[in-house]
Length: 316
Image (tube, rainbow, N blue to C red; front, side, top):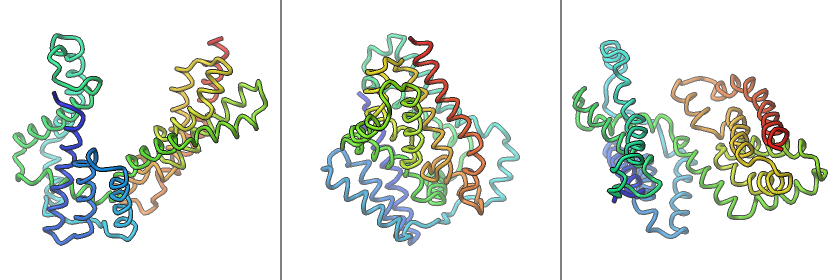
């Protein structure tokens, strides 16, 4: 059976290769950072929580001290990439399309044909596992089609990740932080404070506090998935669903959208805001955020209205 652990091993192997290549080029800080991340992916499930925490702290230390720097691996030049792009045109996107097609088509086949009876994939992990398989298939197709040097995928991946830097793994770190906050009872504390401040019976005000909390926590933590368990435990489930009888589907789904309004307005959402600025080499690292604020604020107001109308007025 192919389990979820296989994906961690696959990612860990790539990080380990980047560590070795960085060490070969004398980039000791980069090598240490990627080696620690590789160790976390390859052996994290066998380490204790203390060891995993120390790995994270060591990575933060390397990044904080400026040990992770932009590398210059021996790949194609800008001119060579431009020439290849002009020659191949939009066909360059074909390998990338293989990934979602494999995930979607494979999931449908596995769940609605006798293929699912084989027990090939870990239960409820089929889509993610097929997504990883799609990546490998796309890599093989690209290698056979374009015939680059054998180390090209590793070198190009290292060049891209080193140019992004520590921000590339920030979303994963923040998502883990959200789970830690929820387990630590932060949601219960916020729920207690909110319950003492919001007048009893004020559904609309409760909706506003819930949506505002989702946006603010997402701005702090950088990820709506990290904010959701905290705000759901604090206000969403105990007040909006259980006390006021709101529609849980609308409250949950649109609450996430309210959280993503915060994503548009924070540098903590590195994968959406800082990474594009780094890849585009913008002088203003907050330029993406400035452009998105004008969309985020009215969108948040619309989400509040949708939750109130859809989860309460229409539902009841």
